[in-house]
Amino acid sequence: MTEPDVLMATLHHRVTARSLQDQTATLEAGRTAISQEAQGLMALAKALDHRFVEAVDAILSAERRIIVTGVGKSGHIGRKIAATLASTGTAAFFLHASEAAHGDLGMVTSGDLLLVLSNSGFSRELRPLLAYAKRQGVLIVGVLSKLNSPLADAADIILHLPYAEEACPVRIAPTTSTTMMLGLGDALALAVMQRKGLTRNDIAQWHPGGDIGSRLAPIDEVVDLVSPLPLVRWDSPMRDIVFEMTSGGKGVAGVLDGSGALIGIITDGDLRRAFDQVLTARALDIMTRDPITVPSGTSVEEVLTLMNDEKITVIFVTEVDDPTKPIAIAHIHDLVP
Image (cartoon, rainbow, N blue to C red; front, side, top):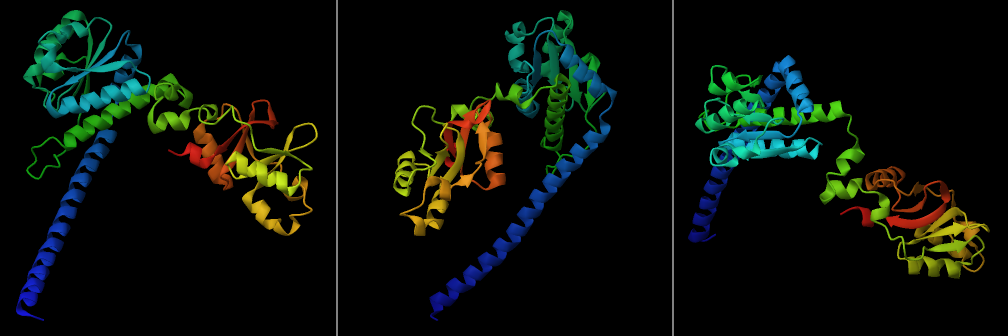
């Protein structure tokens, strides 16, 4: 090994050793932060009391909207809480406390409920909004950690955040406190949702897009209801079966009896197993009897669960009240984004 090679090898060893130390320290910092925030959430869960129930009752009783507000990191958390409330059936929006004092107070009116987030409860930007809400008779729910604060004085219901050190190495940057706010917001939204008795179908109507919307949509919305289905009669020869399976593009063919009822299904595997009967077999001889089907209107998620449980990749969709009348065919590739 030449001298330059030795030098490069030495440098690589030093960098690798330092890199391993850095990796260990970095992993430890990340785990410590997550553990610290988890401890805050556990303390919050234990601290919930009758005031949480009062807040849920107030949200359910609100005549108009839930207005979530805050500044700084609390404001960012507030945006998410408002979005969670709205997506779980509670009319809500976020109002920036600073903008409220410059004309947006008109968004707040009698019948609303104001959910205010502030770890310290002393944020100056909140004061005009709190004063206006009081004049309008708007119920105020305050989420805070300091009970001797202006927000605590103004709030009708106080949701107190228990003491927990911030996960920040110097215990300053909002981390544990904002995690607790976020958890509390989710808890409120989901408790309200439970009290309303909302179902998956209710939630689906507010999530028509993205993965949630596609999984909760009825199977009819994602399958082809127009193109001819790959179907053969019970006495069809192998040649006709192969033609239908190829033209359908799904790798299967449904088998019908004399009255047009679905009595079986033939897959590529069935064809391979019956290869030695290619000249004599009929559909009835090689089909799998009593195929698994799903009725029209079944959610995509339920269809996927059934297909995974039964270890199948293709399934016929039938009329709602007759599992022997196929109207479409679904392949697992059509259902998974």
